[in-house]
Image (cartoon, rainbow, N blue to C red; front, side, top):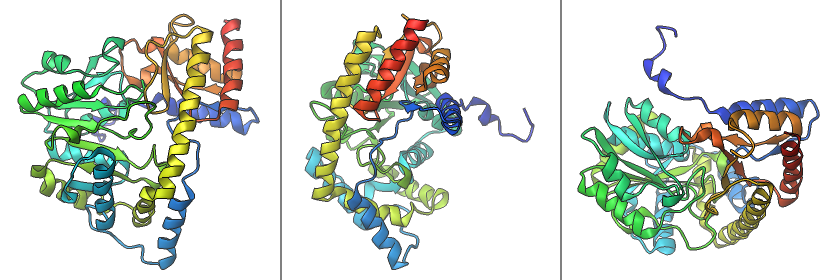
Length: 388
């Protein structure tokens, strides 16, 4: 390794699915039909109401910096959204508009995490969360979870793994890659436990809205002493616009604003104006129609994978993923994914992207394509399995 490279880069793990995506694009360029079930990006276009709001702002020519914390009108809209959807009051001063949820994580950890401090999180989990911690020279301490806890980090496991070096705990609900939602009472207990231990609680809520049953509960329903990360990318269908938000405890407002001023200056102005339209009645109605479609896709894919012999201990409650045990077919899910792509043109994500807890036995399927396309993918998958 070059002596000029920062040592922290050694601890940043690669995102293996991006190698699969690169190869999938090569195959497509060669004329092969590839069905994409690997990337966590909705296939629906951004709602037209949002697009038009962004265009209107661009046409004014006034695409200048907003305040570092975000467009005041958008911060107010987000606060109103919490009151309407969750019956939770949030002071808009605690709300920061960020360049996607990734920007929100950077601000939250930058304001709270010191070098060598540990952050507890579930294994499996979204890989970038661990890498954000490592970027600040902290330690991501992953805790193996399974179906008995719905793949969620519980209060008991937080207590069990807490040490003098622990700064806090992160819970993602709905979770990537498992799609599970933590029960409200368990979320409350986890927050209470972290607060009792004097730590910071981080709630990854970027898949809120994409829930197929009882609504997910925001951590803000139980405490103001939490960091809440959310995004316009998933439910609102604005991945490429790069707009997210962070809600911080009151004591972190000034520190977070300083970081935002220096790191980002501001989130893209036209994207913020576009996001204002995300809360319009017509937009929300369209998003609910899409949520219903995602639910139908989940049901189709869940039944199809079970029929093929994959093990799925828990039917996902939200997001747009199914995390399936493929040990019946392979001892190396990464190689399985590579071979499936080459042989049949179906792109999926190997478990090694999400941790080390039985990673070689798991595959993540994203139902971010139509049922018709998934039906073809399942035919190809069955053909591949039977060949093996």
